[in-house]
Image (cartoon, rainbow, N blue to C red; front, side, top):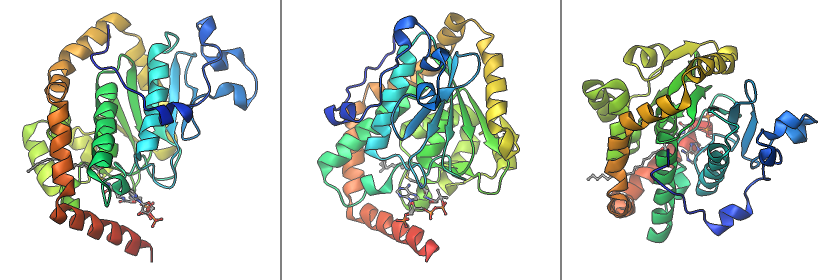
Length: 302
Ligand SMILES: CCCCCCCCCCCCC/C=C/C(=O)SCCNC(=O)CCNC(=O)[C@H](O)C(C)(C)COP(=O)(O)OP(=O)(O)OC[C@H]1O[C@@H](n2cnc3c(N)ncnc32)[C@H](O)[C@@H]1OP(=O)(O)O
C-alpha cells in the first residue's frame, strides 16, 4: 500500500545521513551478514538501528543527549532512518526506544521554537508534521518501548505507535503537557490522543497538561503495558511477535482504515497549519511563556 505522504529531504540532512544498508541488495538486513558491532548497526550517530528478533524487527534507539529533544537535525535523521526501514522489505516491525537514561524524549526542542525567525519556525513545523504523518501512517508494526519521561512531542511519537510499553519508574511520566508551557497542542496532537484514550479523558488531560505516572497511564489507556525497567525491551519484542503473526497486508489495510481520516485532516491543511504555528509561536506572549519555561528548566539544575 502506497504511503499517502512523501518526504522532501533537505540537502543538509542527506549529508548527515548514515551509511547505506549494505545487506539491502541481498534482501536481508545488514546484521544478517554477521560481523562485529560496526556491521550490526546502520543509520546516523543519533538514531541507532539494531537487530531485534529474527532479523525482521529493528530496534531504533534515540540518542540525542541529554534528553532526546526533537531538534530539526535530529528529526531529519530520524526520518531518514525510518524511511530506510520502511523501504526495506526485510523489515516488518520497529521498536522505538531511548538510549538516554530516564528520558524517552523531552519532546519538541524548545530552542527551535524560541528566539528564531518565521522561516525557521515554518521549516521546523513542517518537519514535525512529517514525523507525525510518517509514523502515524507507517506500514511497519511500531512498538514504543518507553523507558523514561515522555512529555508532549515525545508522547506524540509514542501515540503514533501501535503499542506502548512504559517502564515502571517514577521518572516515566507521559502526556501532552503543552498547557503547562503556556502553549496549545495542535488539533492533530489532540486527535491522536482522542483516538487513543477517548474524548472526555483527552479533554481533561489536555486542559490540565497532565503527565501521567505509569499506573494512571495504564488505567486511562495511554499505554498498553507497564513493566519493570529492565523488561521494557523484551516485552516490546514479545508484543511485536504477536503483531507479526498477523498477515501484513490485512493488518496494514486495517491500520490505514483506522487512521486515514485523522491523517487526512492534516494533509488537507498542512500549509495553513504551518502558518497557524508560525503566527502563534511568534507572538510576544508565547515567546515570553517559552522563555520562562526554559529558565525554569535551567534553574531546576542550579
Ligand atoms: C488560538 C489557538 C491556536 C492554536 C495553534 C496551535 C499552534 C501550535 C502551538 C505550538 C505547539 C507546540 C507543541 C509542543 C510540543 C512540545 O513537545 S514542547 C516541549 C515539551 N517538553 C517538556 O515540557 C519537557 C521539558 N523537559 C523536562 O521536563 C526535563 O528536561 C526532563 C525531560 C524530565 C528530563 O529531566 P532531567 O533529566 O532532569 O534533565 P534536565 O536537567 O531538565 O534537562 C537537561 C538539559 O536539557 C534541556 N531540555 C530539556 N527539555 C528540553 C526541550 N524540550 N527542548 C530543549 N531543551 C530541553 C534542559 O534545559 C537542560 O539544558 P541545560 O541546562 O543547558 O543542560
